[in-house]
Length: 518
Image (cartoon, rainbow, N blue to C red; front, side):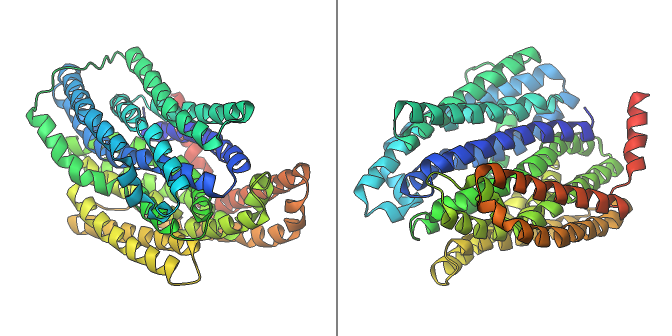
């Protein structure tokens, strides 16, 4: 599968997943609101999701995929599959006792994660209970990450990209069951999370079988390949999970702020993650195995081409998203989230956080491309060192801005955005010094034009949002069409501007389509 087609496949399925996730968050906001009940569930599910991003989808994926791809090219399918079997066996051997220990130590774990609840016994007890329900999700989703890595290395990107759709279906179904049966909503969501992990693991197992891959548990042997995998995973665990670590820091600081602060940040970040997921994950997922093959073959021109196209495609979508979400976030929360326990005050506070998160979108998307260059060269240590520096900066900034200024929860979002740009600057500087980052003329020419088109769109969105503002607080049948009109106008203006300014050249797409048909 070509890089462009792989990116489109992953991006399209991720978009469906993110839209499903948006619907899930919308329903969750209506049922749970932005109070203590929502805060407790958000903290409880943060722990397994943090470990998932840090170890399973982060460190493991970026270390395993290049090694598995290299084995496929150098030794063939048989030895590569044996390596995958051994990796799976060690994963299960390590995660089973870790899961048991963390579940037993959950009260102490939650003290470290959200110490603000320590003096609220009832809330803290529920937090520990939900943490024990959700943590086994880590085991299931880690196996899913390995299955996805194998399929991606084989050029089969669709099954792994589709798995989160099952996650959203399970979570929405769990929410519906709790409302129907009059159960505690956050308890139902916790069980839905763990069940969704099982469903995703089964889905990927079936997909692997269809691809001719039968991953088996064997008696683990510490082979040289596994030793190298583990050595690379340690720094990869840090470097590939900057976003999640920042969220953990933000969650802990927010637990010291007034009730609702965690929920404001969560709902803001969920919408912020929509472009990050669709663009950043799509590019990073498709780029890593592609770059790994070209690095293995020593094809420098191909590496430069794919890196430049990855950044160009990322900017094409990330820049307008950053301007739109940063300048007019409140209409989204007024039009869609307002209802049930989520009022206009909650919509305003959440919109403030999103407005500060949004400028970091281009930096996060570009970081997916730059870190893929390191990982393709099987260098996980340099991104780790850079990540440590940015994480320390984020911790200090989040604490100071949230607790010692009037910004409160908005200060946490601001710290995340500032450190995102610091992270991408250090990554680019280190790559340039090694001669691993060479951007082609097409990217350098089109990037300013994409920025100009985004500014044109922003200039049209601001006055239109002001005109439509009264409609965003009307009935749902009025405010949703008003938001749709605002979004459609923004997309149309940006599309026309980026083509007129030649940030996108239509003839390039037509020529590519003609080549495919031949």
